[in-house]
Length: 200
Picture 1 (tube, rainbow, N blue to C red):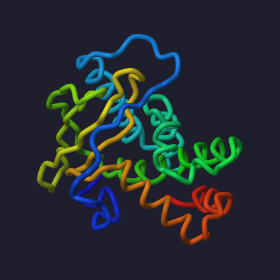
Picture 2: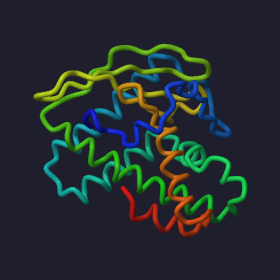
Picture 3: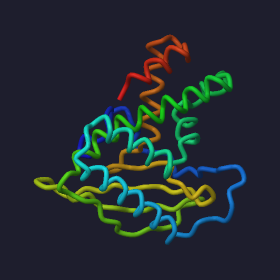
Picture 4: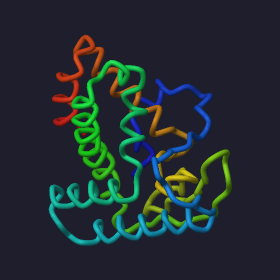
């Protein structure tokens, strides 16, 4: 994760969307601020273990996908990334997109997390933001100035569904990226999914 952690920064509006609640059908009790912080802390610990494992990049990416699926609300994140086009997608296409998207974000962000070798993320605190908790962390990397990384955890789902890196919104960034892929394929969802499997 570096100052170029997210691409196409220029395409993201300065008025980022407000934190969105990731709802999971049948979710049990709402989480607390302490539980949201604990979730992020466990996730960061797992990420650090992968980074320090000395595994090959391919093996690390597979581990990152497991982490993202375990701690993240991937169905919600994927649905947000597909946006309005999801309304015309078939159930099979939505499922295929979610699986392809999970692999895509694991490759894209996993490669950035590898740059944390020798550094760390420190949790600064958490606070309630509408139907979610905002967990603030600071990235401390060797040879770089500290920068902010903020995670959002759904109050009902108890999973993270968004992160901001220096104020740049992951959800909006990936919606832009997926939209661009669809534009290149003239709205062909199946072709876009095939491209997504190779992206990242």
